[in-house]
Image 1 (cartoon, helix red, strand yellow):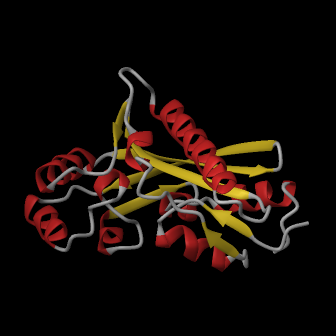
Image 2 (spheres, rainbow, N blue to C red; image 1 turned 180 degrees about the horizontal axis):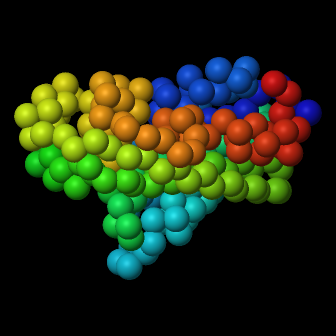
Length: 200
């Protein structure tokens, strides 16, 4: 049994979600010598679900190497990755305001998928689960999009929005997991942590 885990994620939302279900965690973040962003690079023709699984596994292996190199005490390691998909198209974190505007314009009036994979390594075993949610946006105007971009909220977020931000006012319907859309599906996460014998 372990009474804490390592969280290999900079996301404050993932920390908040783990706290919500009572999981003690310590951050296991990439050092300056690591190119963490490179792990998220897309491959030509890769489908969204395959992309999310591959990136999550890559993050987990990088975190395990980091844990070993730093000589830290043993505990399960958790990694996660979220992407927004419109059909076969991956809508990642926007590079700039123009990219965010384009992404949000594509999502306007459409139903998209939010795919989140979560992986846990405990000793030599690794387990991964994927959650897929469907989100329908109402039609949004360019004026609404520009105001949202001005707030700074789209940056660093897959699909250029956060469900827990003012963009929630555009969401007409959700079919799936609210916590999964935030970035860590709690049902799947809890199952993986129980398998890894984490006490919470």
